[in-house]
Length: 339
Image (cartoon, rainbow, N blue to C red; front, side, top):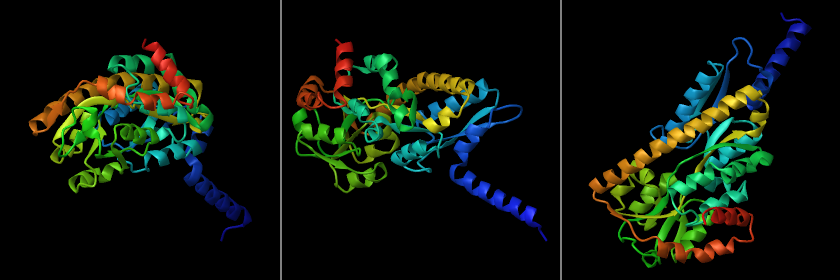
């Protein structure tokens, strides 16, 4: 039979177990100094498949972190949205219940309004200048915007340019989009962009889009070539228009609560690994984009390459509308850097 002291110890143990299950990850990070044989495991969650180049970039980062730390820091990656949606992952980061997550800047708009600048159509001249800005002063300042909201930005990952694709009608000019129902992300900027072309923006979850296209719930959608190919949307949509209306990057975020609990040395290992993985991932992305465009052409998809000037001009009023919003100062800085 247990005495009073034993009973107290059991109760304390049960209470600690409950605390660890609810908020234990943050507690573990804050209380360990990584001395001796300690190992710190950082949980990373995202919604992509393991075959996706962004996932592969994060795997590369995990390998680098483990190597730089001589095995003291490891990353455990959860793919396919098993730990929740992007919005749920962001909220988990804010609470300190999750260490790291990869999310689209479109999903971040609700938490950091300034991130909506990436949803502005035709803001960037081309892919090269897009990355010059992201890896320069402006991009680094934008990564820091979430610091006061529990979200510390580590790096950007390439998710290419977003383009229109349709089931029955090719899009070669802005007028060809008018009247169509186009699936968009749950993003105000994306919906306004599609509306600017005279189409009907229709938010549908990514997992339900194939069926929606197949059943004619929407006439088309917009995304990058690898996503179009890997999700087999070419089976339904036979026209892919490379009009490159937006370049919406992915962002790798770490919980501010977790980040502040790490030693400067661990922070350095993680930041260095993130930066190196970003460069690696961009190479993978370009390779996958080239492969995807070749593959969908073989599947009978007509890949159209229109003059984008007319598309850009049609969306100019939309960009002007954001001059006096939180997006405005960032839009003007980006435009000035491209002149």
